[in-house]
Image (cartoon, rainbow, N blue to C red; front, side):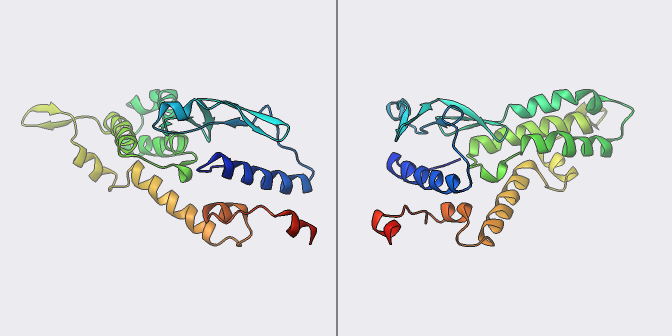
Length: 211
């Protein structure tokens, strides 16, 4: 995946990548590679196909990356988490399974699907709220209502936070992002992820290549 602020920079990084991969006998698949422009301005999002050399990369409005649907409005669709939850709903609703076991089911079978690739996410406040609502829905299924003054009520958000010791899904994602940046910092300066992060990817000029 290549990310750049301008088409010119994207082309430079692509050519750099193509040059390095060709040394390993690898070739970038033109048909499987897509091009997307993310912007709040609609006329920018409607860019045509990207042409670099003799290759043309199809411009799309969305694509799937690391288990999530990335849209050209710079938003991530986390609806895949609902599929993971409903696939295990019978276990979560079962009266034969303890609450602790249900929590482990959520954290091992549902949570990893929802947060897959979260190291690369840029979360907005809206997305953080959506993730929190998704998790609270499952936690309320796991822990059930509370009886208070002879009446049953759903658990409040602060009560749910207390049950999981504030180790919620948003905190987990942020910790994953910090862990990943630490991993990048420990890489050698020549490593492509580190060069991309520090914006040090540079095309060789013809004079440098000749020398």
